[in-house]
Image 1 (tube, one colour):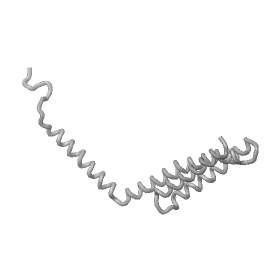
Image 2: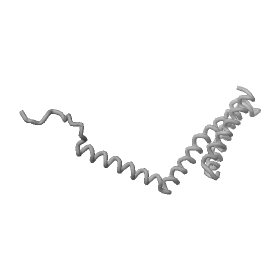
Image 3: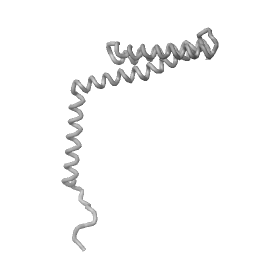
Length: 127
């Protein structure tokens, strides 16, 4: 039998643990410096605008399609098809609008308000 214990009971951190902690903390600091760079802020801004265009634009287009299906004075099938075609057009305009506004949160706010407006009109007009 050898004199080494089967497991280490020391409360002192080992050299391997200290080295891995040093590498992890160095990596976190490099990530923080990277995020502060102008390019990463621009990338985050573009990501926020894309997500606003895709999420709130889709919700607004879907509520518009539901509203137009109820409101248009056509047979049910024709009004549904017409409403869906117009909602694709509205969705494209919403995506363009998300990149035309001055601030990112304006895109989120405005498209959310438009979808709430369409939802309110839908509740008033029927269903």
